[in-house]
Length: 340
Image (tube, rainbow, N blue to C red):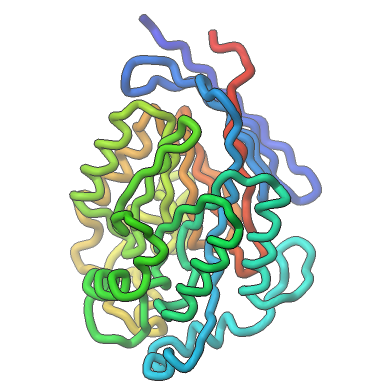
């Protein structure tokens, strides 16, 4: 049987916001037609999914850059001071231009999650500026007090104490185990999946810009379930059409490596690999673009709201930084259109 694909994209600029409607008919892994329709602005999105029984509202939060220090952090001040100071000042809200500390922007958004009837809060990294015990405890307490289910995946700052000796892989492993586990209750910090409302939410830590063979295998296992899938990452997926100015903007950029690392000195970390991306990273990025039942990727890292088409069914939603009041409320809804 021939699957008919119809893609329609309408781009309309409305009051400085980008409104995009994309209608996609893609083939899922079990040979069924997956009907997905996307419409979005910089802070909202509606994704209609064929076969979904009821709506699910997800508040996407990313790059909150919260620092809450107490006396327990004194011995780590030399490793955390640059980021703590950088985000210890009031910052303008991306839309209203009112000023508040990043932690206040974060708490305001959590409060809004209740008012907006969010069913899930998805946090895609750089929620804290370093693995400060007091900051992590603050974040977990604030999230639990909402009474709303939440999912978290790490960014490149959450586990990083600048200037501390060790490779990125070793430091991520050490400080995830020592400090970040409260944000992964009973889950594998490198990759896990949660099924909610008929959607499979798959979280993969690509905060070192790389995806391991084990993470790739996990992704393959999860997409084989055939459910509509949402991928949670910190660093956005590279596409040739949406390549950023710098290799640090995406995961899988072919130019990523030793010669394009512009930040290793200021971040006081190991320089990127001379051999470039892992083969598993390249394979993962390629696989994401070919996953018929992937409907969305939620990412952050660049601090700017953006939408990027990844495939016939999937759009990558990059979030405006929460440290500037940014978020996106994404509603997954039953598909009401013609499926023929």
